[in-house]
Image (cartoon, rainbow, N blue to C red; front, top):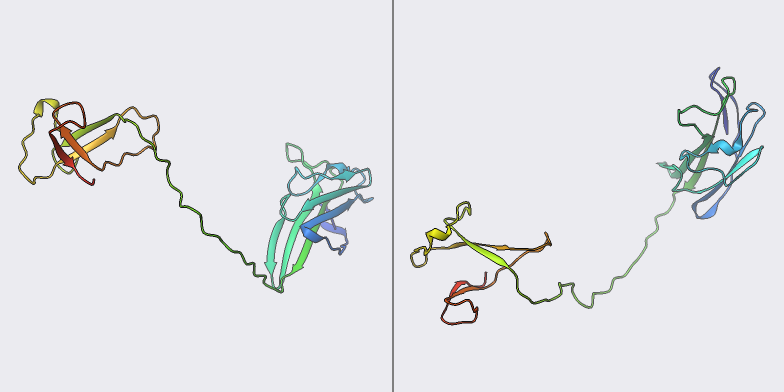
Length: 214
């Protein structure tokens, strides 16, 4: 614990305590000292000011927290891993500490050292999936619109008054198929086969193939 005089810029006193806490938990006690008579232990917090004492009275504040919470930092050096946090006065909304101008600041640094002398290997096993994920098969009628473009740029399309359009044999045709009246923006249409008939019934004859294995 470091007691710092903010007016004269010197250390009034310091002390440290060595202890062991398993499972990454830390139990820390901040003690009120005579040189800070106006200190209220209940106003002390960790770096994260939402982490307040688990218990406090007019003499000390008891903090319980995990090594990965409350603003705790982690640092590696040599063969050590260090977790560090601070107990300090909670500040008000204007950033002013709850002390008088003549009182020194209260700051207690909490450091936990772990020796890094081994590397643990964790094994795991996987099992093959019983089946591959796939979309659910459905059937129904969709409202689509087909347009014939004049070239591969798909910028200019033939209008109703342009039909019938005359094309030479084996001359490529550039069709655009658009799904109409769909409320799902992620829905896509994959056109496999397309044919034309002389009647509205799609299975009527004669029929002419337009797209095969698209």
